[in-house]
Amino acid sequence: MSYVFHRMPNRPLPIAVAGDGIEVIDSTGKRYIDASGGAAVSCLGHSHRRVIDAIEKQARQLAYAHTSFFTTEAAEALAERLIKAAPAGLGHAYFVSGGSEAMEAALKLARQYFVEIGEPQRKHFIARRQSYHGNTLGALAIGGNAWRREPFLPLLIDAHHVSPCYAYRGRLAGESDEAYAQRLADELERKILELGADTVAAFVAETVVGATAGAVPPVAGYFRKIRAVCEKHGVLLILDEVMCGMGRTGYLYACEEEGVAPDLLTIAKGLGAGYQPIGATLVSDRIYDAIVSGSGFFQHGHTYMGHATACAAALEVQRVIEKENLLANVAARGEQLRAALRERLGEDPHVGDIRGRGLFVGVELVRERAGKTPFEPHRKLHAAIKREAMARGLMVYPMGGTIDGQHGDHILLAPPFICTPDDIDRIVARLGDAVEAALAAAGQSTAT
Ligand code: PMP
Image 1: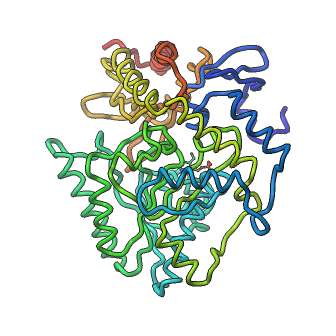
Image 2 (image 1 turned 180 degrees about the vertical axis):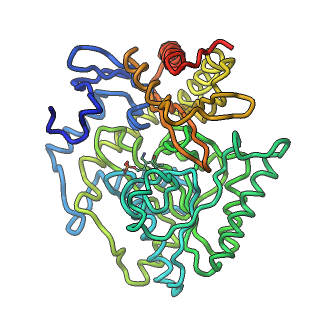
């Protein structure tokens, strides 16, 4: 019996007592390699001395000051660092405590922007069916995960969904990247026109899809075409980089690789690396200026926004990433990880796709490879893989989900940026064993 809500009877969680580099240690002394960074959070691993010192220094000096009275040096320095590195046009950082809060702020900023500039009829949000944007009501409404939304449907704002960019299942045989991207951009444009072009506020997408489908990158050129459609119809582009941003793909902002700058960009997870809860919405000058010269105030706010200790932690995380040149390590270790996964699992008839960018890697499992037929949901293969991995001292982030009526089991890997080549080999060895054991238990021998 536990008084902690998230330790329910059907989830007998071990008790984590310590962290050491890329490992978490439980109360029995067992070590787990954190190959998912929790949920793509712990990008510097655990117990990082420099980040802990920065937190202690800030907490001793001033832990918290409410944003209606003060700004702080930590918030100012963090915003400057993030904005100087951000895609063109993003000029201001709005600090909150996590990913869902960052998404709520983005949605409300988009809405208030249109009210300020005299287009209050713009109220529709369009997102993609394969997406997760958070669990608060606004973020949940735009998310595309039917299972998560279902019980709360009567409470959700009206959001509209189009097809994801999901090359593994969505691209037609023989279709080029260019043609596939164009087909998806055309679908978005049709949806905008169907709703009435002057009634749509924003299109929302994860630059690289995370929790719903396991590190699905867009095809080349997709976001440039999407951006063009949005601009043509005066629709804002909101990119959700809560999971894929802050260096996870080998770029500080994943959209750098797409050559696209959004109007609003959300980040969280890796921003504070788990040392403090923090997220941010980066806001374009255009939106910021409209609010400043309009009502002069963003009608929103949270008690802990711009939290001094959280900002100090995030600032140190970002300094460490730069000083230790960790983005280069993310790119190199990511290549190594995908290559090692292909070597170990690539020939397995139940491994449909190995994909991702940087240290943001997904493995999609199928019952039958040629037809990409998913496993039956009742097998809960993803849950079995998690169990087998934990038994072997490995944390991975497996998911099962329904996208366009297809049930898919995926494993998401998001190891810390500090991983060594040897760490990657250990992760792949343990994961390979866990996947094989779970498939065997599901009555699906990996032998053909
Ligand atoms: N957006 C994305 C892309 C996410 O992956 C998540 C969290 N998994 C969120 C938003 C919500 O973030 P949080 O859980 O910090 O509220």
